[in-house]
Amino acid sequence: MLQDSFERRFSYLRLSLTESCNFRCNYCLPDGSACDNKAAELTLAEIKQLVQGFAHAGTTKVRLTGGEPTLRRDLCSIIETVRATDGITQVALTTNGYRLNKDIHQWLDAGLTALNVSVDSLDADTFHLVTGQDRLPDILAGIDRALALGLQKVKINTVLLRQYNGRSLSSFLEFVRDKPISLRFIELMQTGDNGAFFKTQHVSGQSIISQLTAAGWQLMPRLANAGPALEYAHPDYLGTIGLIMPYSDHFCDDCNRLRVSSTGQLFLCLFAEQHQNLRHLLNQDNPAAIVEFLQAQLQFKPFSHQLAKAQTGQTRQLAMIGG
Image (cartoon, rainbow, N blue to C red; front, side, top):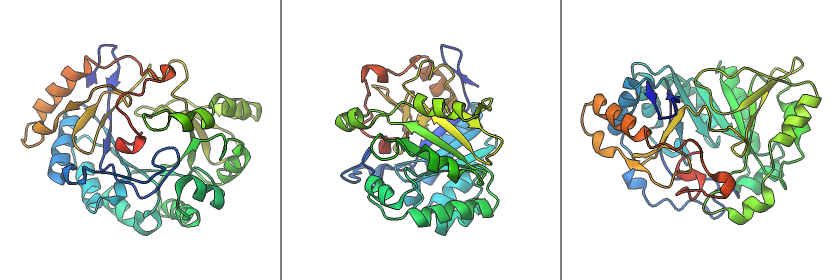
């Protein structure tokens, strides 16, 4: 298995399929998507070689992200290709939910095993203010449909925003009372383009944890191949609440994931200053060469990001790599 110089082991790939997005979230793309590299996105054949290489190195979980990955017309073929790769046991998708209600059955037929949906407010007007889209009812209907179709791993991602949802914990808790889903609050992260917005809207996840523990919620053990969320459960609720707090101490201690952009750039860290191009390895049927490249590059992976020092690397906005 891939291992860095700090003896952290990596079995989780987050693969961006596109930088394009059809939402205008105020914390990410308030002016809309201006993707200029759509023609350079990895092809299905290149994705197959990439995932085979990662699987050869011990990767078992792949998350498809964006931008908005459902804008790829070949998404079902991508899901099917990844799921058919020897060694890959989990194929997850992170989406804004725009096509969820319409296409979830196709994704499941292709082999999808887990779903994350971005829902930054359960109030339709606030959702519209944050995302620029008036589609909350349809997205929530899509989540219900995914559950009805038997998908067991359904999560909701909510970016904590002081002005828009910072005081809405009670409504989120009520939402998961009778739904077997994980709702995760994600601390707003500073990127190259959102400095002023970050200063006015950032909320620490610790305030949510304090409220949860006071109400009897208990921290759950972290599962293998899981992301960085701290997950809390309560006997009176079918769903759980998670916290992703990149500004907390020791956040990077057990990092287990690597990222590849839609154009074949390896991100050793979400906020790295430099990225490594591995696309030249994707035009040959040689997974061992990909493994060798990854293991060599991992020796340069830093122990931690420098977000607390406002060092955001080359990440202009999260749509370029999917968070």
